Image (cartoon, rainbow over all chains, first blue to last red; front, side, top):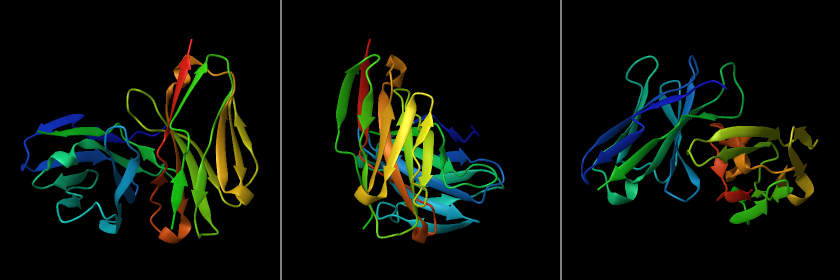
Length: 114
Length: 116
C-alpha cells in the first residue's frame, strides 16, 4: 500500500497557540484531504485540496483553519488560536498513485490542546 | 442528505466465530462508492475495500466478504473464523460522485472485540 506520511505524530500545545500539521501525500497526486477524529468518535471530513486550491470544506473548517502547499510535495494544516475542543487525531489522505476513488490515510497527528 | 449508519456500536465474539458488521447508507446520488476501513488499536486507518454503486457483485477476500444490496442500501462486512488480530474499529464510508471532490462520509464505526 502506498505511503502517506504525517508529522509530528503527537503535538501538545497550549490553548490559544497556533499549530501546523504536516503531510506528504502519495507522490504526484493533485488531490489530498484532511480529516479529524475526536477520541472515540467517527472520522469527519475537514477539507479537500485539488491542484493547489481548496475544492470543498466542511462546516468544521472555519476561519480558524487553513491549508497550504508550501512546496511541491508537502501539505500543511494550520490551526490558529487552538481551543480545547480541537484536541483530536488529524489525518491526511490521498488517492492511490495512478488514480482511484479510495483514499489512503497517513498515520495521523494526535493534537492535544491543554 | 448523505449519511452512513453503523447501528452496532460494539460486538464481542470468541475466536473462530463468524461476525457480520452492518452498514446502511443514504444518498440521493445514483453513482457513489462505498468503502470499509479498519482502525486497529494503533490508530491508523487501513483501507479494506471499495465498491461502486453499479457493481452489486459480492466480494470475498480470504476471510473477509462483503454483501452489497442496493435495494436495502446496505453494505455489510462479514469476517469468517474471526481471529484476535481482527479486533479493531471498523468504519463504513460513502463517497458521492456529485460531490466532485471524493470526500468520504464515515459511519460511527463498530468496535469489534475478538476474544481468544
